[in-house]
Amino acid sequence: MGYAEKRGTYWRARYKLPDGRYGTVTDESGAGIRFRTKRAAEQAANDAEARVREANQRPSLGGPMLFGTYVDTWFARLDLAPSTMQNYRRHLEDHLLPAFGERNLADITDADIAVWEQRERAVGYAASSIRTWRGTLHLVLADAQEDGWIAANPAARRANRGKRAGRSRDRGPEKAITAALGVLLIAERAALMSGRDDEFVQVVWTGFSGSRWGEVIGLETQFVRPAAVRIEWQLYELDSGELVKCPPKDDSYRTLAVPGWLLSMLREHITRKAPKPCACHGFTYVFDGHRPPNTSARRVGPKLADVARLAGVSIGTASDFLHHPGRVAAGTQERITAAIAELGYTRAVEPATTAAHHRRSGFATWVFQPAATGRFPAKAPRPARPVPILSDPWPGVPVRGRGGMDRATACWLPIAPDLTPHGLRHSYKTMMVEMGIPAVLMDTQLGHMDGSIQGRYSHVTAEMTARLLEGLTARWQEALEARRRMHPRSPVRVLDRLLRGSGQDRLPEFSQEGQ
Image (cartoon, rainbow, N blue to C red; front, top):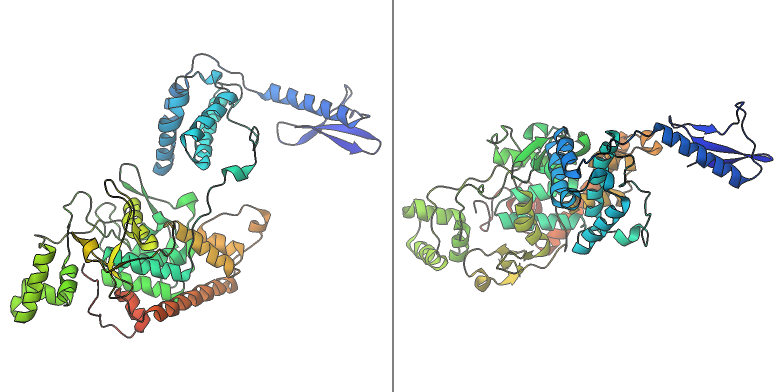
C-alpha cells in the first residue's frame, strides 16, 4: 500500500516496486512530483502501486477448471513427508472438497470462503482447526493463481478482517501442565497401569526432556550418548496405523542436555530391557509397547500378579506353584489355588509379546489418562469410571479382572486433570521459564527456531547448560523427597530403589515386575 512522505514543505508519493523496494511518483521528465497535501500524495502512491500490480499480474486462463479437478493434479505433484501428505489429504477430503469440489476455481470468492468458515464453526470445529484448513485452501488457490487459473487468491486476507473481535475470541483453553512432583507421581501410576517399570522411565524422560511424542517412541539406543541424547528421528503414526520413520518436526535435529540422573535412568533401563531391533524398521528403540500388537491374541483377564496379591505371596512363589509345585508349601498351595479359583485365572499357552512401539491413542487413553486423572475414559457402552485400586501398597495398585470394582478398596484422586502427554512438553518449558533459563537454550532443547534478530545474535553457553542441569536436578530431588514424605516405599521397582537409595537392589514383595 502506497504512502505519503513529508519532505519539508511538500509531500512525495511512495509506492512498492515489484522487487520489494519503494519508488517515488515522478513526472514525465523523471523528477519527483511535489504534492501540496498528504491526501494527494497518498492517492498518487496508491494509483502507482495499483498500476504495478496490474502490470505484473498473470492473466487468468479461465475456463471450466473445477476445484476438485485441479486438486487432483495439485496433490499428485507434491513431494512432501508422509505425515504432511496425510494431513493435506485429510483437510481436502473431509472439509474442502465437500464445499468447493464442484465449484469453478474462478467462481470461488472470499464471501464463499467466509460462509464456509461460519458453517464449519457452527458444526463445532475448533477455530484453530478451521484456520489450518483455510491455510491449506490458501495454498491450493495460491498455486492455482501461479498456474494462471485465477487472477487473485480469494483465501488471502489481512488478519482479523471481517471479524467481530480480535484473536481472544478464538483462543483455545489454557494447556494443562504439571510440576516436577506431578511428573513423578504420574510416572509411578503409569508404571502401575502397565505393570512394568518401562512407563515410569518413559514418562519421566518426557517430562524432563520436553521431547515430542514421536521423538520419544522413535528414540534409538544408539543415540543415547555418554553425556547427552541426540534427537535424529521420530516415528509418525499414519491413519493406516503404519509408523513411519522420518526426521523430527521441522528438521529439529538437536543434542539434548540431560541431567546425569536422568541419563543413568535411561541407560539402566536399556541394560535391563536389552531391546532387540524391531521387525518393522530394523532399528533398536529405547521404549516399546506395553501390550501385545493388535494382530496377536491379547492376554485378557486377571494376571499372575493379581493371584499372588490375593493369596498374599510373591509373584515368584505363585510362578513356582504353576511350574514347580514341589517347591511350595502345602498351606501356600491351598491359598494360591483358592485365589486362582476366585479370580478365574487361566494360564496363557504362550507368553504374549509386546508391540514394538506404543500407539499414541492407546498409551494416552489406557495408561496416561488414568494415571493423571484417576479415571478411565468413557468407551461405549461403559461410561467414564474411577480406576479401582487396592490401597495397600501405597499409592495403590490397580485391580484387574472381573469384579474389580467390588474387590477394590479405594480409587485414585486426580493429579493433573486434563493433562495430556504433550502437556508434559509444556510443563518442561514452564519449568525452564521458572528457572530463568535464557530463551536461546529453551529453543534449543525444545527444537524450536527463533528467526528474530535476538535469536540470531544469541548463543548457548556452557554456563547456561550447567544452570539448566542443576535446576532440573534440584527439582527432581525435591520431587523425590516430597514423594518419600508421602510414603517411603513404592510398588514400582525403579522408584522404590530411588526412594531407598541406589544401593538397595532387593525387590519388595509387592513388585509389579512380570505382570
